[in-house]
Image (tube, protein in one colour):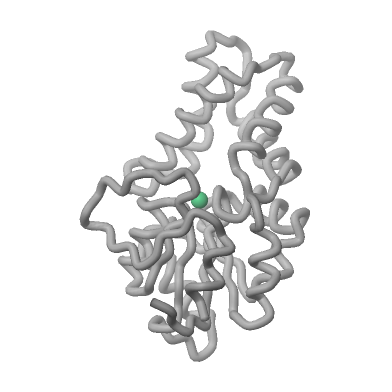
Length: 231
Ligand SMILES: [Mg+2]
């Protein structure tokens, strides 16, 4: 199936930017400033805590400002670390996370090539501090016709109001010509379903789609496969 899509909505973390790599470097740098040297295993523990909190957030189970600090509180508790100001840690982490953005394979090239013929928009659930910085230092920001960050919009993907906000900012927008590209079933694919646009699941590791209620229009392992899809 090949369709002429005019508007591409891009998830950022783990779609265009290798979030795990950024997370690892940023987390180690931050804790080092607090006098703690983290191992890769420690980072994996944090990563799981953080992932769980983001899932809870997109399900509407927690406030963002609460979870951003609480993930660090849980983490330092698990590692039995004392005397760490988790609020300050989170603030520092947002800045560092933006400093160490690593692109996914072909991420920049595919996005750059498509920017010549498509309208492209970043749609991301990250924080404004980290996401704006990441988009700037990778050069990705210049490839987008609009950037929508949940922090600024006031809603997280998959909330339909996040997408309605984005659509309202695009002149002559037609949802039938729009495609959402992202790695997350719970925020990107479900969000596209809620918003009534087609979606492409970037699934490089061949994960199994557990939830049958989520409608996937395309599934790709590499971003280059998009050229075959978007027309
Ligand atoms: Mg993602």
